[in-house]
Every structure is written in structure tokens, then in C-alpha cells.
Image (cartoon, rainbow, N blue to C red; front, side):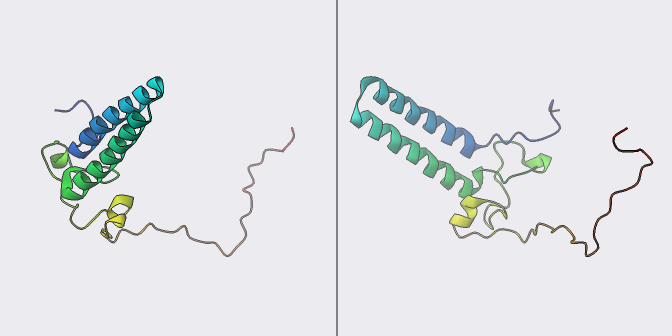
Length: 126
């Protein structure tokens, strides 16, 4: 049994993208230290590659949507079941043309009567 009652979101897309981004950032750092334009360009290109690889893996089902997942989908070996339709609040899914579920954020009810403070019997300024 897990020590935590919730999913931390460790996914193939997350770990792969992070690993590639670390390599790109290391190239950027080496480019700054050596004042090398080609190293800076290579590091920036690798970081863009990390973004694209992470996005592609997320769309392929190896990422996860925001929020909690069912316990049976916690393993890194399990693909996200809702990836094909897209995730409702996911920018990456919207950019790929996947609109996701029909999750609607409920609006707060608007009161037509003015709100009055509740009297507590405590004098203000005492």
C-alpha cells in the first residue's frame, strides 16, 4: 500500500520531459559559462524539444490530467484513459484540438438582495 492516499502525478511524459529539459538546461549553462553561442542555441533547441516530447507523450496518454486520478491509474505503466478525448482544463489538449469532457465550472450564485452584516451582540471598538 502507498504511503500517500493521493497520486503525485509521476508519469512517463513528466519524467521524460524533465530529463530532456535538464540536459538542455545543462547545455544552456555550459553556453553561459563558456560564452558560446552554439551551446546556447543547442541548449535552447533541446529545451524546446523537451516541451514537444512531453506534449506528444501527454497526448498519447502517457501524461495525466490536472487533479486526482483513480487509484488504478496511479502506476506509470498505465495510460490515461481520457487522453483521446482530451482533458477539459488542459491547455495542451486544447492546443491539439481536443476539447475534452463537458466539465463545467459552476458559477457562484448572484444574490439580488444586498448583503447585511450579521449582528453578533459584540460592540465594535470596545
